[in-house]
Image 1 (spheres, one colour):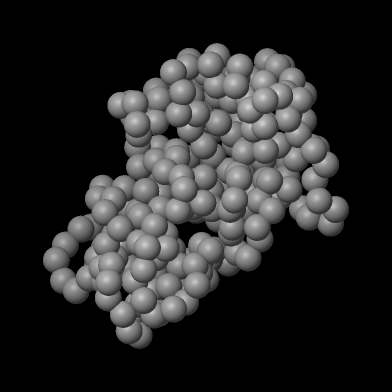
Image 2 (cartoon, rainbow, N blue to C red; image 1 turned 135 degrees about the vertical axis):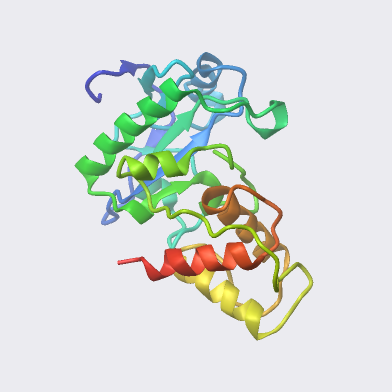
Length: 244
């Protein structure tokens, strides 16, 4: 149990895969009415889901699974070719109603608690800034959390996560679903280079739209529409160029 947090053990965990480092911090929202409701679900054997920590709206942090164990939070997912994200990650659920239930802003006290927790986790596991990820980053076809209202810039200012100020939205050439050709291949290649699980087909298909949408939720949240406009592409290039 991590110091300074509550402990509500979940039975839903397993051994981490041998030889895989813990090098990802994966952030979610609960998509439930309250932190208590989420904790009840995540500690119920029938749910077959769990996470390592839940951060309530008032900043209370509850640990459900020991960090040495593999919590069940990522589901079918991929990042930089790795598909067993659960074995590689610490999962943190942040209490929020989610997109289907009004999607309120995250309270300041809650984000302050997330920052403190994330700073501690990243320091102990030596998690790099570019490996602090959204659930939607690793599962873009299925997930939207923690969403475009999550203040990634505030975390980055505290030294957590890879983030740059997004390129301002403006006019100019854009790529959209249904298009095909070398510019689409280049976009897909850059997204895959950054880490997204995306095949380079040269066709702006549903998977590409989902990945662009996930990228926007995390890195260009002012407009989330799945269209790779000039702002989205420029932000992606700057992020990719700053890796390493």
